[in-house]
Amino acid sequence: MKTKLSELLGIDIPIFAFSHCRDVVAEVTRAGGMGVLGVAYKTAAQLETELQWIDARVGGKPYGVDVLLPTRYEKLADRRMTAEDLPQDQVRFMRRVLDEAGIPRLPEADGAILVQEFLDCINMTREQTEAVLEVVLRHPIRAVVSALGSPPQETVQRLHDMGIKVGALAGKPEHALRHKQAGVDFIVAQGMEAGGHTGKVTSMVLWPQVIDAVAPLPVLAAGGIGRGRQMAAALALGAEGVWCGSIWLGTQESELTPALKRRFFSASSEDTVQSRLRSGKPARVLRSKLSDAWERPDAPPFAPLPYQTMLMTEPHLRVARGKLDEWQYYPVGQLVGDINAQTSCRQVVHDMMNEFVEATDRLFRMMHDS
Ligand SMILES: Cc1cc2nc3c(=O)[nH]c(=O)nc-3n(C[C@H](O)[C@H](O)[C@H](O)COP(=O)(O)O)c2cc1C
Image 1: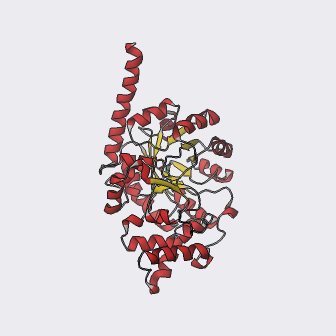
Image 2 (image 1 turned 45 degrees about the horizontal axis):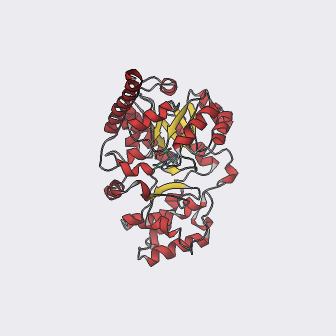
Image 3 (image 1 turned 90 degrees about the horizontal axis):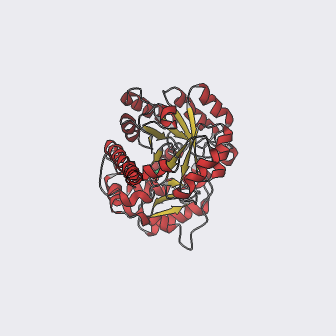
């Protein structure tokens, strides 16, 4: 399929797979789309291992990474964070909620080490982002996508000098225009039904707004796409490809535990909530006892980025160690209502393309037969 973006990036099919899981990235890339690895929770050393693993499997096909490239670091942390930096009201609240529910605390001896190990994976300082970028530049990466705000112009230039294309996510036309000014090559317009951090506008309304605002810059449509009819709608609205996150969570390659997968399969589209519990910024997640706890009248305010992410480390580890699935929150979009059984990345790509062809055929016949 030829679209501006499949040509720009040298891929066969304009289906992009955002995932934190290297298996998904490799498999979608091998199937002719483009896998994009989320790097937000990986140290530079871990990333190096993951990219070597992907390189060994994709046979030179183009793939990408999604990195935190904040324009202004002063908004984030200026040094390595430790447990002492965390806002205590919120830490105490979470401890109380989990204690009341009888969820065991982390073992005294290694609890602090576990938390610190986790904190070190959250790339929030300029140094950490720089180390991650150095790893990226050592691999045959075709595209770098900025997850958080417009990338600094000098970073865009540096990536362009290496022949790497740059994209950025936007939930509003204003954000997309800022990204365009920063010199990016494409925009990912993400509607509010998407999993992860989202704005307030639905995909159907947002995509054409962004496409018109940044034209002729190519735009990928994101938020609520998991099948071919949705892809046909996105391309009909002017997108040059689709960027999907949630649909891969139900595949055999995904990072989810079998128990969490079962919860996803039985969830409806109404079982997600936009909550600030993950990072302090609104993100769509599967509703859980933990997301409900933050809605209690005695809950303190959410801490700002990056403190909320950091203070959620301990509860996250407590819940994971206790295998308490109904407490686990995980980013996922409203599409979760359509994810009902395990499939594979290759099958998703195949089904999406088949349904896309059927949908466009149907439209063509409507015109032709009349
Ligand atoms: C589990 C999960 C984690 C995500 N984490 C990130 C992230 O770290 N960076 C990012 O740019 N987008 C992230 N997103 C958003 C995706 O990039 C994508 O825009 C979104 O999933 C598209 O909507 P969909 O979920 O309806 O497919 C995440 C999405 C999911 C489902």
